[in-house]
Image (cartoon, rainbow, N blue to C red; front, top):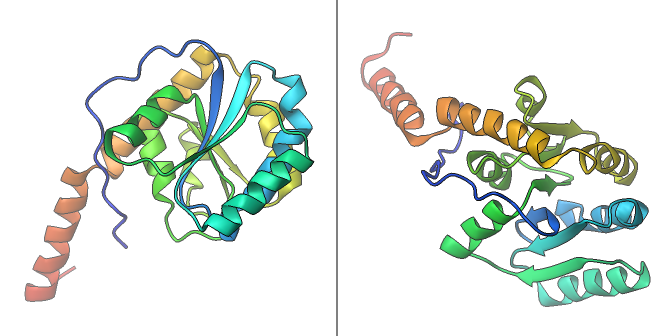
Length: 201
């Protein structure tokens, strides 16, 4: 009923330069669909030599090791496994990237999507996440789960220019400011408690 609130950073995004970064930032877990992401990246990596993929987040060491082995088996190029990042380091990854991805099989919210958008970073998320609004707000891609749909989406999204992705990201940031920033969420919480105490609509 009331979504998670987010802090919308005041600092504008730095002008991206150098290699372009596709970012996964979240928990390293089988439910996140990372095997499919790696296979989708294998399908498109040679078409987009100016892009890299960075996988950032905490996870079980044995599962993370299995993903690294898969990356070697697939002969993946420009693929990084960074480990966890918090605070300013996490914000730096959002500012560095040009596109984020959450290929999950199930999410009840997906904080990394709202955090990405709040940093002016467009996102890709599956329809197993509650982020259909990215389509209506034109700030990302809401796609079917699975490797095939993700591969098709990467083919479409990675060919976008930096300015096109930046425009999408700014639309997402405005959406986050209007509907998910703490002032609105706290107002919704206040109204909920008023209703609990006094009734009404």
